[in-house]
Length: 404
Image (tube, rainbow, N blue to C red):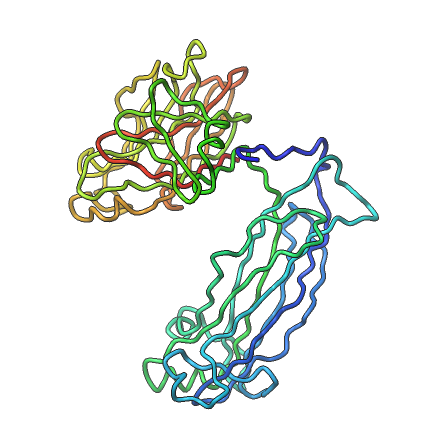
């Protein structure tokens, strides 16, 4: 189901204890081409207990050590594959399989299916041969930059508790070509330890909309459009507004929330922008008469600004928050870098209640803090909405919207 439509559990005790099992680490053979190296054996099964919410994780280690030749072979820098022995490869593919199980002896789960988000963090350390100290990350950043770890873009992010079918996560390790003899001497004699850490966090989305995977029927089921508006989507296509002043709204069920949107403007050197509405209510239950606030990604305002305006009965008022392209070098002007304004960007708005009817909204652009505002708004006993708006002669492509 779409838009927070997963059946919520009827009861969930605060702490959820479950096993996260890492299975079947598969390594293909690899080689260091013109120097000797190898992948040392790694545990094929790692089993540990995760307590969701406590930050506990499961970690498995992989080691490349040129002094310990094994059946895994040797790894080669990508540009040296043709200068290497017959068994040389220029990548090491890794395949982890994850299962997430409830601890049956002390069950704390009641109700419907429980979903979680797989969070993976990867770090590695380089240790020169015959030494015990790890190379300093800052001093030897050029050496660390020779190592590349790429995650498969199709890796699954969501996992279901007690699902016996494992979730497969794939990665590829490669090496770049050293730029000089000094770098070569360090990396060819080094031990490289990789640490893959897996964590499950509860999927607590109020809305989780991937517009590229939605049909028009799906969109109509979870949204409310203002009169005579034209918002379209189809599978493998983003959500598009036709042009002009168009609005679409999505009801939410919580008062304090974080809304995140990924979008881009479709044409370069054109007017227009897009907006994300928050703390929105309908006056007289009419979606054409929305009141609330809107964050605007506006390349046409003073050569590029991020703006927040109040809205009332379908109209907008003067900005109460602005950041110009010249402030803090957070983003370029439309004149200097028009391409940037058509790239996909992520806007995040965190809305919280400070005290009584005092609210605070904090704004982020691509993970960078822009600032915050405080305002008076009574959120209780009202149906709240978040929404999207376009304007000008440029279509906006919206790829995702989630609220949690």
